[in-house]
Length: 471
Image (cartoon, rainbow, N blue to C red):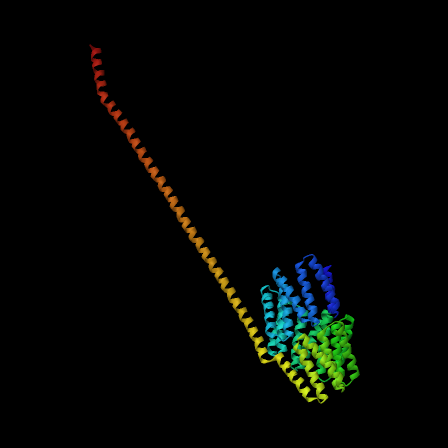
């Protein structure tokens, strides 16, 4: 029952219905606690953390992640630990706490490499690449995305390869290398279509639409956005639909079709509010603020902008704060309130620089170098341990050989002593026999001499008897 609720929660989350997903996950957690299934408890806690993260309720998300992590560490559930470490790293990354994010990602990566979890390694490499990408360190981002692609190719995971190609395309898009980005998106889309992966298809169709928009072709972009929206509606993907509405609103704004743009932005806002996606609400409000500035409706522009900024600050997401400050600066500029416009533009610059400033970049690179050093040191230590084990094995073998030789010598000595004792006894017995033999021979010789001494007398007697007989 609990597992079924988890699965239903996942489906609800994929469809963008976060409150329903949260309800399923809490019910699953209650059952897991009743039967004291620690693994199930940890899974449910982690799932709840994901929902709160998607809703922008960061303190709650971190609370549930850390609860899950403690249980997973007690159980020595390596895969569970790495999943939760990665989730915590994602939060810190969104909050601009780059050093913390990299620390959690590298902890996760170390365990994944130790247990040879290639799929986990690939995912974590993607998250590290994203950190560098968001900081504007394009060479590092591409290095890690290509590392990820290599692992996916080793796994022969077409879905993973498609995702890697898409991420590389996004980096080139950010570099304004639109033709190269389009090549990667098309390659990724082709794999998604082969796999019939509708989620991947929608992401790539959206990316292709964005490329056309950046190429100053909003009509072509709208063709892809509408195609995307249709698939997402079939999938009941509310989060995807909200994103598509935002993109469509931006394209209509570029075409000066402001009524359609307003319709799209309001549709996006409605979905975000229904799903209690606070970050999405902040983004939608920001888009509405910019549209109102374009159409000269300054009061509405300021109202939407202030609501977006307040929500972004509650979430503590620097990227959303940056966007809201920029919208308010624009609105005040249109109103010709240059003091307020300057104040908000100044804040926009501060938050823009905080996301990818030099200090933050150095911190992430330092963190990565520390990981690389520790990884190399671990390899060296492992090699030394192997050498020690081999040396100990050799030493043990030598000791066995020496002991065998000593034992052999002892046995030889014992055998020699036995032989010597046997020879000694034999020698003594021989002497005794020889003595006895001599005694016997002496006795025989003595008897013979007596016999010989008696023989003349017998002859003499015989002679005299003959004489008597004659007479």
